[in-house]
Amino acid sequence: MKSVHKTALAFVLSGVFICHAATAATCEDEVSKLNQELADHGAAKILDTAKLATTLRSLNQNGRLPGGYITSDEAKKLGWSGKDDETLWGVKPTNGKMIGGDSYRNSALPAAQNWYSADIDVSRGYRSNKRLIYSQSSATKFISPDKYQNFLEVEPCQ
Image (cartoon, rainbow, N blue to C red; front, side, top):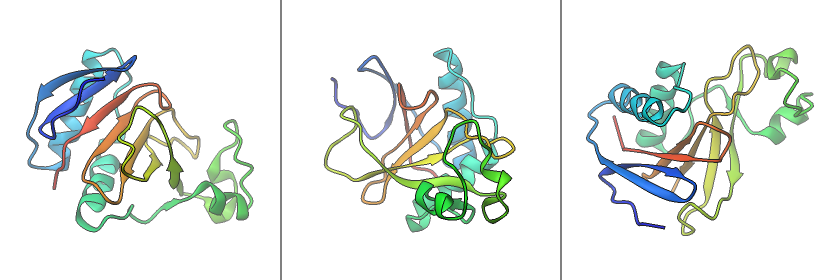
């Protein structure tokens, strides 16, 4: 696997990195670039671009997900079954919440960090296949448009 420069977007497709130079001043600009890269690879675009930009900005500024995210374990303690076919919003204490902050491991990602995942594009409480992968000890983040099969590196933004 090729190494990824911090100034490049990298789409991991079957273990191969494809790099393109990128600079993004704002998180909105970065999400727009991510959507273009996803479209170029035939992957589903990010629908809730404002929510993703807010999430990226929060992680970049203070290392935490914005309000509204809870871990799977927290949601289950509040009554959610954890099943893909059950809306998270069907249980009053989890209504309006999204899953985020769960530990995540994948051998395709740099092993030096602890990785976490957060949902992207939740619709009516149903989780999509899109995930944000992040580490609290690194500025490096990834988007997976297809439930951890492929990864697109996210440039730091503000």
